[in-house]
Image (tube, rainbow, N blue to C red; front, top):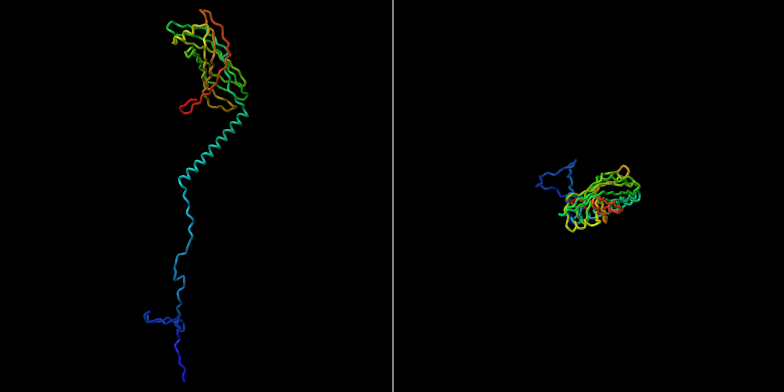
Length: 261
């Protein structure tokens, strides 16, 4: 009995090319057909290579920028204040600065006439003593204007020449203050006819400071002397000089833009 031959159920992995593809098969050297292989994964999935992107920078908000600016400004101001305090402390330790002292050493009323129409004519001889108590600081003054008043009424004006006030030095300045035909209130005119009058003396100038070879900018300085009693001359007789030795108050005047302190 002859054996039966069954066809294989396994498909041929390399089927021959049909005539629809050109009707010819490729030969390999000795005339055999060239086997074809299935496409690889790289051919099936032709995707671009992945490249990681750098992380996006966060944009600062406007509030964060304002907060940072405010913090920096505060830190800068605090630093400047600390530096100024340190500089001031070092300056005080090295120089021990003190204000100049002024006092009225002598006042003589040589002429005083009060007319029926309450007009005053007066003449005064005034001596003012200036003292510099500093050991390392020199003051230099512009010409000094002097104004004398009695109960708010103008009693005479004058001036002192400018000078340089050396260290640990005392300088006596002398001048004459006059007033001619100055109108006053009847109440003030009545007080001027008494045996003594009360006077206030004001000095005003600009002063600078010299430290070695360094000079500062000049600042306005005002000196106020109050409570000076002077005898009134009688007739043609000149009154004797009064030596009140009144201490005066010294005020520095700073000008910042439109304001004066």
